[in-house]
Image (cartoon, rainbow, N blue to C red; front, side, top):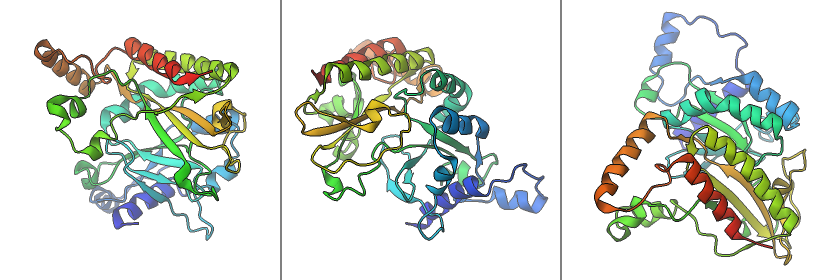
Length: 342
């Protein structure tokens, strides 16, 4: 782990283990030292009681077990950097036991949307639908102070902590490489990096992260299919009402011959526990991810206007980030249904 990752990890862990109940008034010297922080920020838990309610009452997590997930065997507490898993420039860590992921949310319009617009809708939805397939966000950390490092973009100031759908892969005796992951969203949209100038606007490493192609069918029973689609209909209805687009279905599969691995879900959610394929070859898991792009925020509005002007001449069609929430939801649900074979 490099110095930058070490500083970010320490900031996250300090907010979880050593956050004071009431922040005392800072002295002038403390304010100066805080302002000139470059990588290690003082983070705080946003709406801590709300997230605690979700963890304990709705999802039935054990609070002591949750805290200990962030502590390594030597009790020192150290997060494992996962690297850049996304196109947005987010950084990822996982807890020592791999049960939880910590993802940075570097773009202001995304973390503002979650904090100001989506969070209470999300919590109400989870109360009404505790087995929802929206990824379970267990904490939201933010930097309450302005710092030089934050203004220069040297380290992220906002992080979400969420369940890790890949929990169990690291301990799979048959090897983690057999686990396959797919970040699925409708392929019929216009992606400039992929579709313009013969696809030469971006290197292959970037284009590979734009959109995944699932080269098979999800072979399940009619009951399992109906369970998946019923949850996604409810979950995407919430996202449409919140004006969100560009979310994806995160699909995981590993060979059914592997020893069954543990999961986080005390409620027994079918697609979190793992669904065995009808041909007994695979076990599937699925959650709904990346629902932070809201059409009413400034940057998405500017992007929509720019693409609309471009399409006046090019006629390339909508992007997944500029289309309407209802139209995106329809294409998304049709995509998922087309992947399933009963």
